[in-house]
Length: 220
Length: 240
Ligand SMILES: Nc1ncnc2c1ncn2[C@@H]1O[C@H](COP(=O)(O)OP(=O)(O)OP(=O)(O)O)[C@@H](O)[C@H]1O
Ligand SMILES: [Mg+2]
Image (cartoon, rainbow over all chains, first blue to last red; front, top):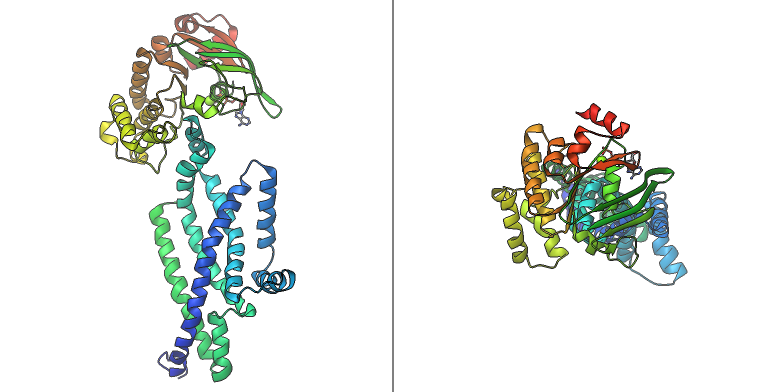
């Protein structure tokens, strides 16, 4: 029987893979932190009355969403940092930047959609009592919009987590990279890859379940 | 208190206000009536620059709204606005709805703002709802909170855009009662409404708007019981 989880081939790979998983999760979380900042700026920028600001962020969103993340990572790591400016950033940093820039574009759409979905009477009520545009955004529109962003942001977390798997091409030591290293010496390819998938699912399934519940609770 | 001179407002090619002249004296209650699409809301919204003015002048308590040096937030803080759909902030409690403006615009402390808000809540008969969220209130209660929220800024003028037309009939009375009290205290009010009873009893003057102009204006009793303009006559015969 090949498929018993107690088979040592599965378990043996685990300590190795978990080292990779730490990197995978770190890149995702740090990357999304910056992605959230970029995405908020971009999302609000796309709603700006100023057409240059709007244009700038639209180009960013379209370029990122229209190109594969693999190409973006290669471009950032080899194209920009090594070739163009001759700067040697670590693979880890390149991975974080790639997630931030990539997720930023998707988060921009989440932010834009959520802010746009808030009834414009809310904005008018704020402005008509003398709040500035900024105060109205900060105290009235944003808190309501943010609630609506939580489910799609959770979804973006799952997507970005999986996206980091392509970073083995820029030598990020993530789960997939570690798996390849491991089975190249042990040749236990099937067992190792089963464990890789299980590790991803250990994060993605609980996250998805939690999001489902949260979505019902937030009633958005 | 309010002077409007030859006010024009267009949305693109659509001219909605075609030269409005009007004045509202201090402590006066002016009701605005007219068919749907005649520009009543637009007119009201021009009075606090929720719509920018295409041409003409609006002067509120000496401040020329089209003057680029006028601080519009300052003007708005003195002009309360009550909306048809209340526009309460659903993520804030009733009390927090009312204290937001005083805290952020007038820079009162939380305690000071609360001291302003609680008597107002009492005045609109909702002291027991201070810590509730708007979603748990009836339409009539929401609108009374919205009025209290505007009053918390201690405005010189209150604008009402069909404040009772989204309410169930049995809830209209409470809101009108609050508005009547306000009028009796000497608040300057501009009220878009189709509540004839309110206009007759509380209104000092009625403006009848049609197709972006004021077709007729005068004493409420005279306008409702003895309208001169044929447009006014046909409008009133439809809604009465
Ligand atoms: N933001 C806008 N953009 C374009 N057209 C608008 C806008 N707001 C209002 N209008 C148009 O202006 C006209 C007057 O609208 P307004 O809301 O002032 O009418 P109203 O008298 O308040 O009507 P109602 O009794 O239905 O509230 C309508 O034809 C409306 O479609
Ligand atoms: Mg209207």
